[in-house]
Length: 200
Image (tube, rainbow, N blue to C red; front, side, top):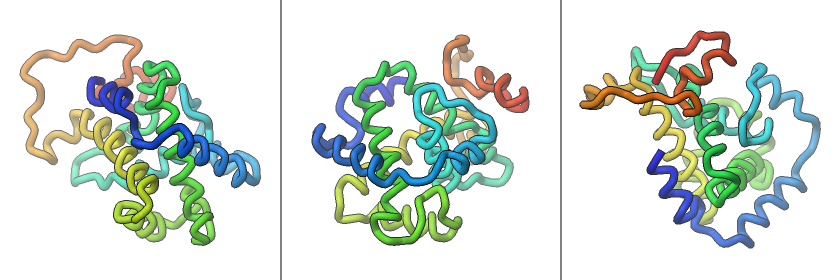
């Protein structure tokens, strides 16, 4: 995926190693309780690159950031978070991976830091929407960049699903698709999801 390779080269957060390290330390400090809630959200899905907590957070963010148009799939049906997780495996633990992991830690625990009462994955739909809106206009650059970067990546994968194209007036590519088995297409994840998804 060329756009994500571009992000990998120039950095996802635009922050130095110190800032990313601080986010990781904050996530470790704020870790409390087991992973039961995260595993329940994933419903048996096994992460490829992210941790269980990170993938569960990414799925919660996808659900909150993506509103499906009539006739289009939801974020869950398009397997957006899982396809992004699979894509990260191709970046071999580089800066894109570390930046997304740091961003996910920030987005999950920032509501607690801001004393909003719960981690992002535990917020109601209305509270999650308000929190994301505040991140989008935050004066803190890391919050703003984390929000924008994750949203870009999720939208990139969402609108690569051909079931979304009609909602944006896109007729599809002019050349036939050339899929390969190791890619992040929905068809490559279908077996793990009981075969209910199709290509995209």
